[in-house]
Length: 79
Image (tube, rainbow, N blue to C red; front, side, top):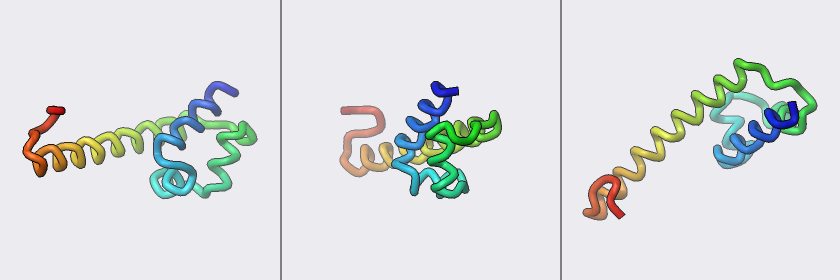
């Protein structure tokens, strides 16, 4: 259980913290903190929703990176 809470806390940080995660997951910030602290059990559904939100974040970041690369004349995936 502790490992899952720690991993969930890491995912919250990837989103940019509890406020950003709350918006992305549609969950109250206090509830998120309780999940991260192990005070509330983390369900399979919550982890699935978190994974889906992370995939959406990846898609947004990829699109933003492509836009920057195109605007700077570097093309996608070129450094």
